[in-house]
Image (cartoon, rainbow, N blue to C red):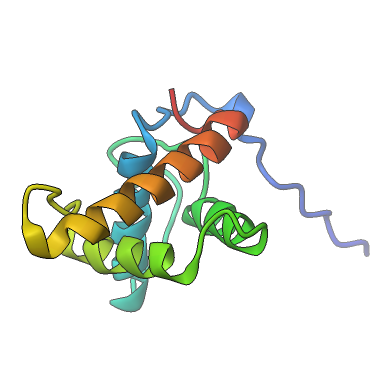
Length: 121
């Protein structure tokens, strides 16, 4: 007996709610990663809002920017640190001034990629 073929679901067929901006997408990705670390298993239909991608798509977009050398290590570190704190760095705070600049550069680069994929408005 033949096994049925696995056919991935096409996200364009689903009524998904795109992200408002890349910052929202990043914080959503970080929350998903926190849940994974805590042992959560993702199943379809349990989320409050259906998103147009998997969390791994955000990660792959960031990785592609890093490989293309549009982002550096310090950009990733800032995204990681403040993402897990669930806040953006405050440019008015002297200690976070540099981080805020890196954050803005990284979010800008991520915006370009995610807009091209149709994941943000």
